[in-house]
Image (cartoon, rainbow, N blue to C red; front, side, top):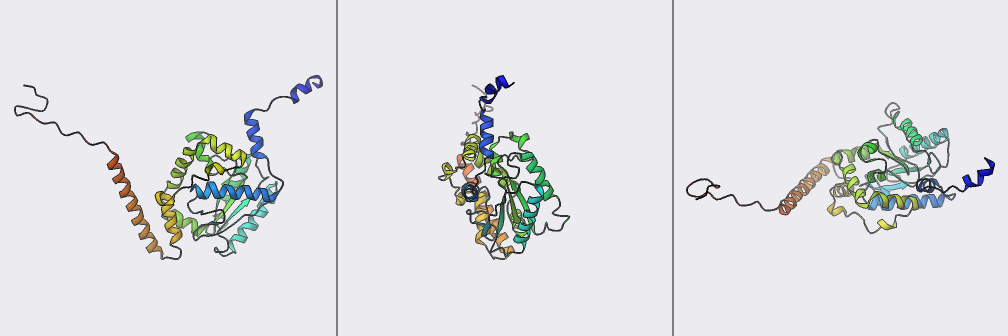
Length: 292
């Protein structure tokens, strides 16, 4: 084997191996990690409307408040557990106007093992109800190779919709339950996923993957979603603008907004539909198909 060792060492790297190596490389400087993550949040999550309640890398939630970005480089589960609970306690004991949501960045935890990372996240989500803290927090997880539970069946592991959760580094989003509940009550079931799927498929899997590998989302900076003409964005913007308004008033305004958007959609579809052909004219001596 030693005789042929040089041949083995010179084996060319495949494209998949190169992509994997690029995705799992972690900068040594925390500032670079934070910059990568903030740029991704700013462009993909906020500007593209993937999270309708995120207005920038700095502001998100209902009501809008600051986003907290702790970085933790632990690689052992017990270390991450400890840091996670510290951040849960910090969020719960902080005023939502000081911290609306937390993005706990774990650049070196499971970055090369999405299956292991997913298994770990299950151990965080499962006990929320049993521990009695589900009424305080909800969790959303991100990873460079994330695949939705139904992603493999619906579109394959490379499907564009999976990029809604494909962040530069593994991450735990700790959200406030009251804010999540308000959003769930206000937005039709499945609308977020459906609209995100359409948005990301329009960009394309190949371009999204290349941007993720390079950690450069500048090609998307001119494609910001216009919330005025986006059903999900309009609903979210109304909720954000209604900060402090009575719940019933917000509900009525939302229902009216949705009704107007549906009417406009129907009118547009009616205008685009081809004109119906005129009904056949019957001849005096019989039906329309009779001939003299």
